[in-house]
Length: 256
Image 1: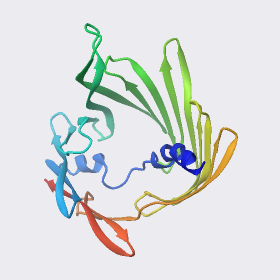
Image 2: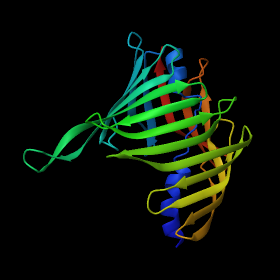
Image 3: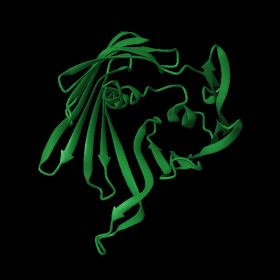
Image 4: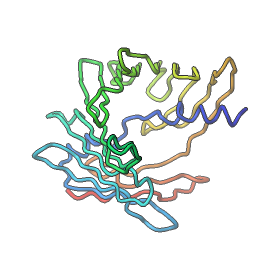
C-alpha cells in the first residue's frame, strides 16, 4: 500500500516550484548574452542546456543538448517590458497518428502558454499544437507576492472542468500549510505543512494523503542543496549537501 500511495504522492509533492534567484527574469534584467548549463555525470561536467537572449525580441531561447530527455527540443520564453513572462513556447518530439495514413509518425509538437497579469492574479492559458485551448490556470498572490491559491481548469469539448485546487496558508516566509484537491480519477487530497529554506526551495513536508477513503502519513525531507550566485544575482553553481559535505552537481557559465 505504501508504494501505491507514494506513486500518487510524488506529483503532489514534487510539482511545487518556487521562484528562486536563478529566474529568467533576473537573467534577462542582467542583460546576459548566453548561458551554458553543465551537470556532473560520472565525475565529468556534461553540457545539458544552452540559453540565448535576444535583446531585440526580449526573448530567451533554451535548447536541449543533453543525451537524456531527448524528446524535449527547445523552449522559447517571451518577456514583456517589465521582464515578466508573457508567453512560453515548448517544442517537443513525439509520436502522433497521421490523419492520412492512420499510422504513428514521429513529428515535432508545440505547446504554448500565454500569461495574463491582473493585480494579484496570473492567468495562464495552455494551447496544444493545433492552437486549441486545453488548460487554464489561475494563481492568486498576497501582498508579499506569495502564492495563496492555484486553480486548474480543463477545457474539454462543450465543458470546463475543475481539475485541481491548491491552497497555501503562510505562517511566515519559510512555512505554510498546504492543501491540494485533485478531482481527476482517482480523487485525492493532500494536507500538510511545508518548510522552505533560504532559497525558497522545499526543505521538508509533514502531512497526510487521502486516497480512495484511505489515509496515509507523508513525511519527507528533501535533498539539501546550496547555491552560489554571481554579483548580478544569477545562479552559477549548485551543490548537493551530503553529510555536511558540499558536492558540486551543476555549473552555469554565463556570458554578459
